[in-house]
Amino acid sequence: MIELFLVFLIFGSLGILLILMNKILGPRKTNPKKEKPFECGSPYLQDKVNTLPIKYYLVAVLFLLFDIEVVFFFPWAMIFREMQPKAFIIMFFYIVILLVGFVYAWKKGAFEWER
Image (cartoon, rainbow, N blue to C red):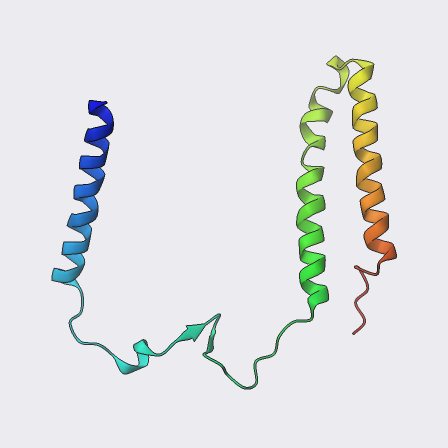
């Protein structure tokens, strides 16, 4: 209980110290240019912002999804010889589920690049 109190005391005082240092050492003048809103590398509500089509985001999400799922192959491959046949069957069905998802995304046209 006392350790928890010490943690809150130390980090609370560190937070207060950092805020005070910002007030003491930080700039005092405001700059009108810095006060304007700024979003994603372009001025706020800029007229000619070139947005990317949704297909690029869809491909990026699919890449991350399948990339993370494929990461599970590495530990499986490292202990392949020590595994029981049951583990091989489980991984086979895992691969089948991955392939079904990939074929579904392919059939839906998620990988088509034409606009």
